[in-house]
Amino acid sequence: MKRRDFLKKAGIGVAATAAVVTAKAPAIIASPKYNWKMCTTWPPHFPVLGEGADLLAKWIEELSDGRIKIQVYGGGELIPPLGVFDAVKSGQVEMGHGAAYYWAGKHPATQFFAAVPFGMNPQQLNAWFYGGDGIKLWEELYAQFNLVPFPTGNTGVQMAGWFRKEIKSINDLKGLKMRIPGLGGKVLAKAGGSAVLLAGGEIYTGLDRGVIDATEWVGPYHDYLMGFQKITKNYYYPGWHEPGTCLESFVNKQKFDALPKDLQGIIRTAAMKSNIWMLSEFEAKNQTYLEKLTKESGVKLLRLPDDVLKTLHKLSIETLDEIAAADPFSKKVLDNYRAFHKNIQKWYKTTEDALYYSESLQF
Ligand code: CA
Image (cartoon, rainbow, N blue to C red):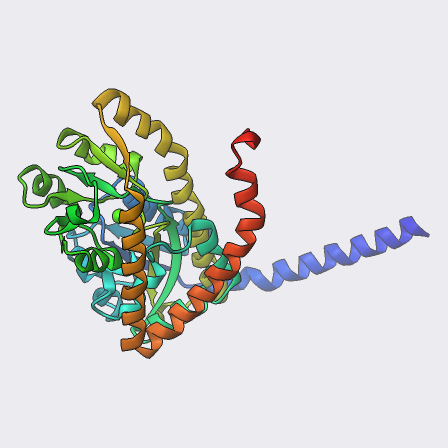
């Protein structure tokens, strides 16, 4: 009886599969092909970040069996790095790749989807995106600009940066010219410093020639490749300003809405894969490169003093409150972000903190 049931079910299964194949075959033959352009904010094939854009295009092409082909352009190859947002908005190109805090001038709330000083780490941020309201709010914001956004990578917790002079108190930040983007730059300004905007390719020379006194970048792996260790040995942690910066890709909304559902799903899936891939690249290599920096280049690993961190924390809260007070949509996103962060921090206190921060329980 059981065997007959099984065979019967198996038979139905085969018939159903056959029906699907028959029905789908003509659709595949008739399905349109898409030749897209993706412009990035990174130098061409830039390690991890630009590589991530190249891989995203490759994965979308592979997963769609060649139905979407995407030609990737580094910053300046087709569109200037900071022109990518408008180029995708207008439909000049179909897709962009960058970090949402580059678009603070378009809307202040964009910054909350990249990095919030003293905010959520990558694991928590992903929980907000995929399990909370994060992506929904991000989509609502970008829809105003005719874009559909996707979390597409994460740097992990960054380093505080490279300083030509040691930072011993908050007074050492007064008058300090530092390359630091996004909300972190606004906080530094409140502390009496000035945030200088320099594109990735200009930072090394800027620090070397004293145009800036300090710079942050990402973390040991990427910073090593940038070569800042040749200019100064003072390498500070923790990256209070970027506790897990999310990278993004985005598609022109009309182009995205016009895609068949399966291709929309493929783009979302490939972006999700890239989100994990990029974080894994940084996390797997950072400690190894930190040791290279200290052992090979004599870099001093220094912690920002507690009173400096406490002041920066206070000024960060003020900065966020001011943005929320000035703009209702920013308030909506920030309220949601803060509530989620508060809740997940409680859970982390019970679990992660107890497990990872007890010296006696180390693996
Ligand atoms: Ca950074």
